[in-house]
Image 1 (tube, protein in one colour):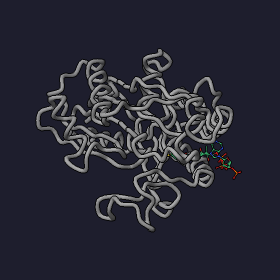
Image 2 (cartoon, helix red, strand yellow):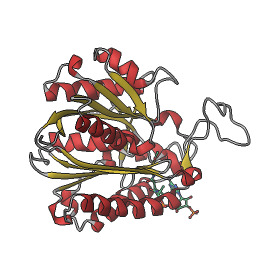
Image 3 (spheres, helix red, strand yellow):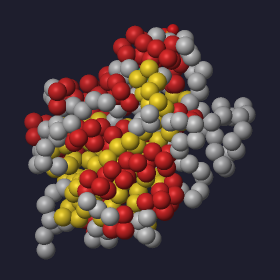
Image 4 (cartoon, protein in one colour):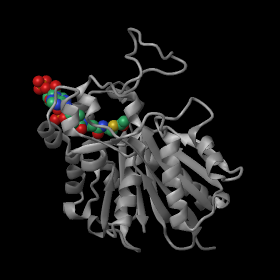
Length: 325
Ligand code: ACO
């Protein structure tokens, strides 16, 4: 029997209307456009409007991806949403979205793997399709991280933005996703997180700092560069491929310098790397599908090309997917 692959048959993305530039941030915290651009590559990011939630962003991206794929919502038999910023504690944002889209009674769940949430979702979807358990899967990454930023903390608030990206996957005899690789190491939890929640309580006390992202950026940076280098090796080895066979690197958009380091590891010129961090900032789980959709829509990525998707985030979590588009 021939192997079944998960093929990307549609992509979509959505960004909130409000653009926040570095110059606007100069009015809020002690920072400069020059510092932000030099250290991160970010020029501007989008911020969700008041009342606009993660599900709202996810819905727009998902509708576009379904339309591009020519797939009706009822055909979706699994919906996975990567997010760290769910609308409410429960039901999951995936369930809220499933109902809005009219996906029938397909399984729907959120994946919280911080910035790696979309890659984790893609990996799960790939396993379901390869096992023959699902045929048509909607995978989304959507975030409203602006809601849990400390707008007095210049070391974090300048980095993040809001947005959503989605893909529709379908079972096919031609590849498809060639492999996915996901990992985590909870030993690094103190370096990056938001330390409040249901069980610990949402109130600020001496043990937590309220609902806001904290990060020891410099240390995260070093682990991210090392770890992403390793996952690139792991992915190529698993597919018996060499660096030169990768057509496009579609990385998590946290910091231009981290992206450049991974491109260097692949000996890849920056012209073959999809970069959106300048316009989007770090949109966490939304960043990879947003970049993928931009690349598809802009005509960069062509059918048959090999794409290496990778992400790194809080947890730490990290992962990759090698895709023949
Ligand atoms: N404007 C001006 N100065 C600033 C700002 C700012 N916005 N933020 C920090 N600084 C200052 C610091 O206070 C420090 O000053 P000091 O030297 O007087 O102490 C100086 O700039 C250097 O700070 P560093 O933290 O060493 O700067 P670095 O070059 O490491 O850049 C950054 C910081 C951009 C955060 C970088 O470390 C980074 O990108 N880290 C990784 C982020 C990441 O990948 N996160 C993972 C995904 S996120 C997720 O999972 C939700």
